[in-house]
Length: 271
Ligand code: PTJ
Picture 1 (cartoon, rainbow, N blue to C red):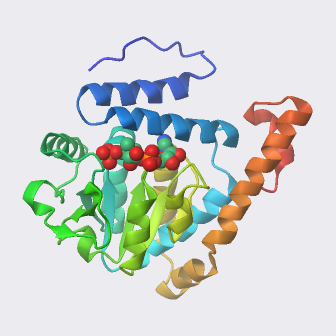
Picture 2 (picture 1 turned 90 degrees about the horizontal axis):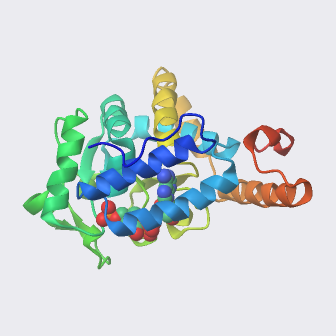
Picture 3 (picture 1 turned 180 degrees about the vertical axis):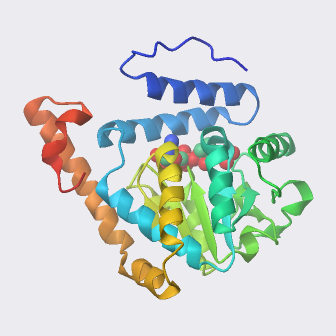
């Protein structure tokens, strides 16, 4: 499917507009729900404040996430409409290098969407996709949304779940089941961000490629060293740094009327 409009390459917000086009196209294909477009808008607002770049605390979380995925016995990557539209290829690549399973898990569940998302993931190279139709017959306890439906061979049995663009209830419920949760979430105030074991406050389109690079680097480390990396990481503290970064950036913008990333150098050490 073609983009609605040709986005001028020299447009200052070309990248952001291209991402929007991707979501709109995927909405038309029945992969993204209309609510997903609204959710993206919330993410965009946070990304705008962050300066549309990966900040230092996100890099720290990515290192911890890479180590945790390599240490996990049964890692599963949970995919929904937005994440498959924005990062299917990279998520499949990440699954391959971390030996993770991939499962479709939707808030607005319908069989048609499950099949459409499975197709996207299969075309992106996934050999096996869990959580479609009757396969999602297991239940996450104490969760009433459609997200409670999981695959017994996937999320239900996982010791670690990587999820993104999500509502907080399931993260909390998965933690109660004793699972480690890695969340990719632009909003550090969200319940997902607060409940996850490791929160990567970054745009999924930047975070997953960086996570792949980090896993490639970390895979030569010993399990002892990987455990040390995970133990040293403190999610609450790291979220605090993200919030401090946002506060400083807002004050900086207010004081100097700056808006653009090239003027953000003075915000180090957070960048
Ligand atoms: O495909 P479904 O049926 O599972 O539905 C997916 C949506 C996204 C509609 C559903 O999970 C939902 O309603 O999510 P929320 O509660 O709106 O939360 C989405 C979160 O994703 C928000 O807190 C945003 O900040 C965040 N977000 C949006 N875009 C991005 C993002 N985080 C990282 N990268 C993004 N590109």
